[in-house]
Image 1: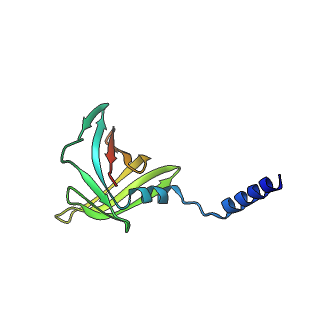
Image 2: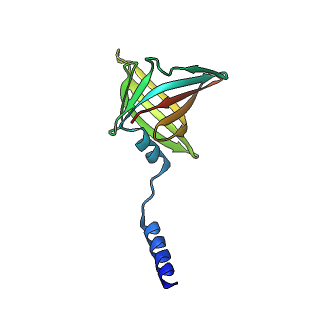
Image 3: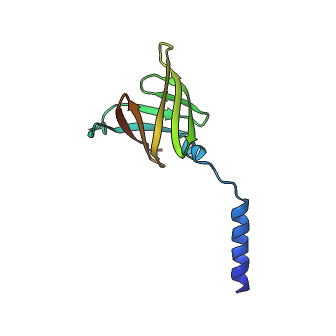
Length: 132
């Protein structure tokens, strides 16, 4: 019995001393260092598949930089507001025009990313995957 109490106290002590990571930093760590490939786009309940096709991809580096298959180069950040995560991209096109956009992160994991954005009154979802 004494051993169980000691283990419980040690567990509580180690848990109270560990630092947690916030949601935006965790999401950013899942994005960084990977190339994400567009698999599906969903708009007006119509799903378009891009699996097996040379299509859009986006890379995120561990030093907050991003490049994509359209030639955009810039920086990214992940922000949390009222428990909603947003992926913000501030980039330049190959011609030097500013391209800034924001995606809502609906789901993120080790190898899948689902984001959405509103274009006028239409919500568009994009589903990405990575191979690490």
